[in-house]
Length: 282
Image (tube, rainbow, N blue to C red; front, side):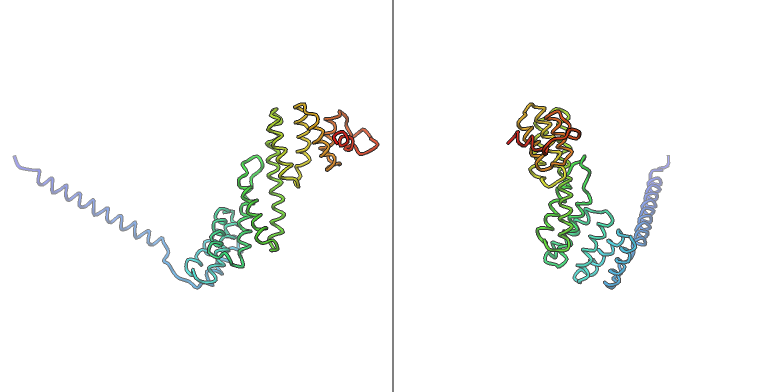
């Protein structure tokens, strides 16, 4: 019987050789295709790249503008345009809603150029990038606290800069937001009968956020919580402070009604009604 194993081995080797060759051809085609897809690196004048980036920014293409500003630094890292482009890239990222990238880029600018005359704007850009991410009071407020810290840094470092006024205004808004979060938690505890926890939250508002719009309600809620616990003196004290500082407040009218059972909206009195509780306490 003839030996057929050798011819079969030759055929198998030939098939494997053809297969390997085809694989190599396929890989070379893929590599050639990829090389054609990637544009060749072409160094361009710095003014050309920068102006192109500015044109895209003005046209509303903030993402492409940021990429071109990055290209300025990549191709001309030691030029004065590179410093300008770093900050402009951060601004473009901010406009595009890429706040984390904007914060990273602005911080990098400050690390590389801490004494640059545009440093105040870099700090401000970080602050407003946090500020734009502030969530409603029903959610976790870590970003709000970061925004407050960044805005305070702008105000502390550059109190007479053009950004200080806006930082001061935003600080007030952020503090009001944080006070609102405390009030929401306090009301949650109060509604469920956890009066001690509620009192702690309302006191935080009065102590740490005295200039916010939430203080009158916090004092009224303290009155309500103390009355629920049967602590009359503390309830009267909170109501008296409320009446003394916010005599026209609807919250004081509510507190007075809780303490006396009278609605001062309809019952006239000979002297300011907040003085009646104030006298009873002091």
